[in-house]
Image 1 (tube, rainbow, N blue to C red):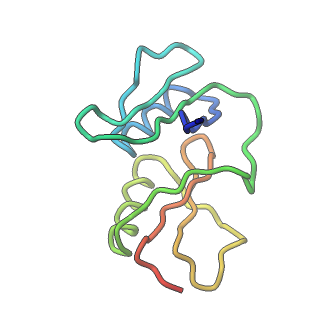
Image 2: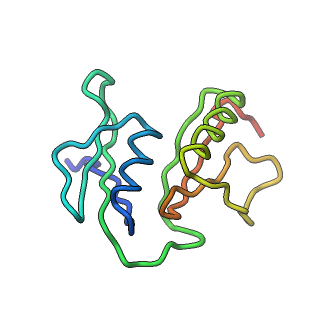
Length: 125
């Protein structure tokens, strides 16, 4: 049986991406990073989680990516606080043209322009 091993993000500035995602998620490098690749994992005491691999890429960022990360917040207050924390770390809000009328998500981009969402898991439409 297959299992999900990593979510891989292409980045142009690896140290900047590592700094953002380690601060955003509290993840740590699995091993020493090299100039083109690093795998980030949850800290040992946090339990299971999906690792994130960051690899250098020259591909342009997609405006409407087919794959992205969803980060879950426990409620609207936590969602708002996390969005502000992530923006302070270097993320930016995306002027998303595909928002529904009453969204449960906020679209951000990391320091490399990769889109991700912060979801209010208590939101009901």
